[in-house]
Length: 71
Image (cartoon, rainbow, N blue to C red):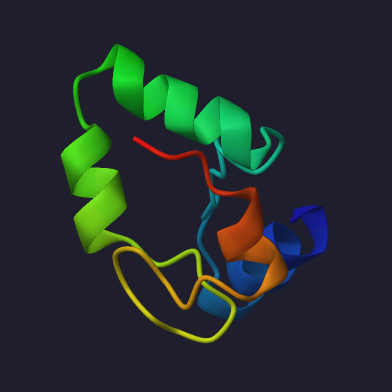
């Protein structure tokens, strides 16, 4: 991220900074955060975690889908 921030800032001749607040939390923590803010349905239905590109419940076979908590 630091390298990307630096490269883009140089290329644009402007101070540009990319923020990645979820980068350091795992999938379980992401689901817990969504639950805390009452957004489980949004995360479950409108985001992509399946490695095979299937939104919502996913494929059910890849490593990402097998790790997903059931709601």
